[in-house]
Length: 258
Image (cartoon, rainbow, N blue to C red; front, top):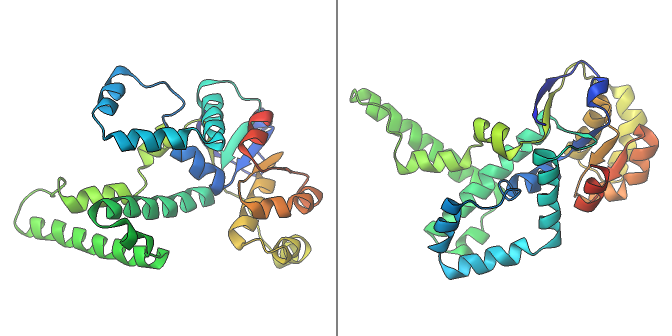
């Protein structure tokens, strides 16, 4: 089960009950891509030649219960037959893009220089570095064009941009496999709605991004909204009272519904 939907309000009956994944769930889901399937012989051969400490760290991380439960979610959605339809909005995709750019740059930077240097980087620092990399890549392409040569696709800058940018084909066929991406149409956010509903969320210190996830999940007609963000746990009862949606706060709660 996977794909894209264009909705005109609530999702069609055949896609209900639906479960909305916010970005905290989507990012963990993305990070476990491929772990739902056993390693093939080629992958095992590649692993056999890696540094020993990498295997130790990987085994430690995979032993975490939450990671294993997210992997089970992937198995259920990619290989099984879930009882609910998992959906994401374009906002989730935007936040995933932001996360990928930061995570990708940090990973490459940690390999290029010290981990201590990378640790000191803030999000705005990374944004500045990425901006510089984009400018350098544009200059690289322009210079090749002026020389009458083909685009220099196999360069360090090209590789860096490839890691930072979210690949649409990979996202739809692998990273977000098992989840429906739902277009947002006919959605209105009025001052009246803001005063009546959103003020409660705001007073509980939910950020505008979290509030938008709630509003879109409600707009889609979802029965559940899943988030690993502790802010949703604090607002669970109010979200239920206003929207009727149940808040799922852990991978185990998601699995129990799926």
